[in-house]
Length: 351
Image (cartoon, rainbow, N blue to C red; front, side, top):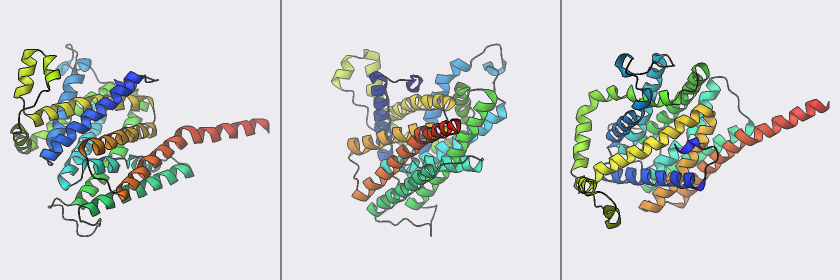
């Protein structure tokens, strides 16, 4: 996967950009047609990930044809429940009038939620780390207020009505998702420290154990899929169609455009989540957060450029605060603290 390379070449960087481009393109196309398709998007991603990761866990000599887990299953159940909830909340927010660029910016609040989860578990942070997260929080608030103002609304915690597609409800949903995601990241880090870095098992079980949770929602899923299935057939470009086998061209030409976008979104999400799981097994939760912020920045810019989403000056300022604070947090965590520790060690030796 993308993040397996310690020193990414230009090909890996191009692949990173292309994956983000396709994922944002597919997501925008689905959301613009059916804003409340978040549940179906989540299920599609989960099913494809399970199919792709099952061969690595297959063992015909074991019950249910699965290898014996290196981690107690109850821990994977806990991780899967949190993972399911985070993905459901993130995609559900699209039904509450949250635009894709704003969705990306608000999810960049991960640095603050990661710090909060770490602090609750006894970790301590430097002054610059706390300042950068405070700056990031201001950026999130500015971005949210700007988008709300653009929709003729005000951001307030008073009078939230969750039965309506209110912007305020969407903000609360995303906030809860980020806090839960931060705790899940720390929880998985603890699993790796206690039982080894079995990131491939985590990737499989977090998706496999979550799929039964969709069963009570099958009526909603069927309705969402039917709405996407009536979209116009996919238009295959001449250059692309000429390079495809005739059977593949016929299949694509007969596939509804929104269904194809759903499949494309699931494939690109599989690439992304595989890289994130590998990275989390080899680095700290903070590093994962910074890498994800960079990825969100790329997605954010693609969404603005490709789909012409309008950005006010206030919204752009808020976005710059978010991503700038994320970069400052990453520098302090990976460079600043180590430099000070090195100087202190030298001073101690010289005494």
